[in-house]
Image 1 (cartoon, rainbow, N blue to C red):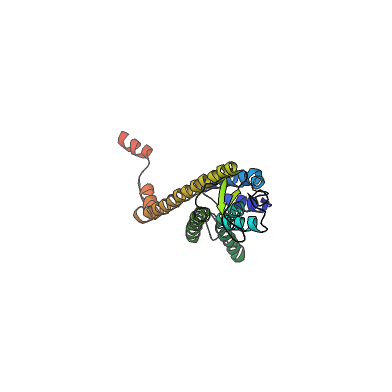
Image 2 (image 1 turned 90 degrees about the horizontal axis):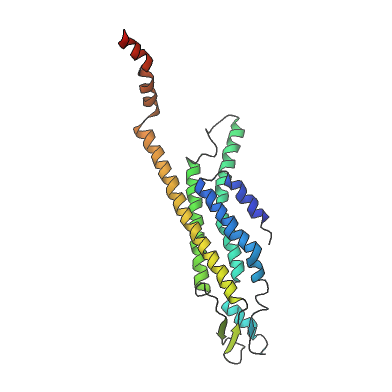
Length: 239
């Protein structure tokens, strides 16, 4: 699978993200996409051929493999990466909409098109909520589809058309388990970063509203202009 398209999309979103959002992007690139491309794809490359059962019954191995792995773990991992990265596009699309509005009206409508306020704040919050929900949903899917993140070396199968209960063996079980643990830990880290970033932008927005309501800019400027400079006060006192 070619991941260059996803890298291009996330790189474009990076300039509209907060500091915590950029850390999230770094984790996705280094500990998820890079690990997947460099190692995980090769480990799961011939998973069905490496799934061997001690029977010669035609179709038994295929039936057992389909029973224990209704969807390939590595493909579910890839689907998770695509889904959790897609909501970040909402922010880039919103900024593009702002740029289009300014070009249409031929005047500056926003102080900073990429500033997280107004409608863009709502879009950013929605993207974080979607990313977190998809992360949690993917982890739950892994847990319930495969009975946790363990990869046993041997499985006992009695699916039809197997003549009786047969033993089936998974190749590279320990290596696959290690990669699943890496995937799970990176996903949990991304969920934590999403919560931290959500709290950060909400607190920042509340602080901005508080300062606008209780410390008006006009009042602050009036107090600043009405106060005489220190040099004039000193000269009056000296006279």
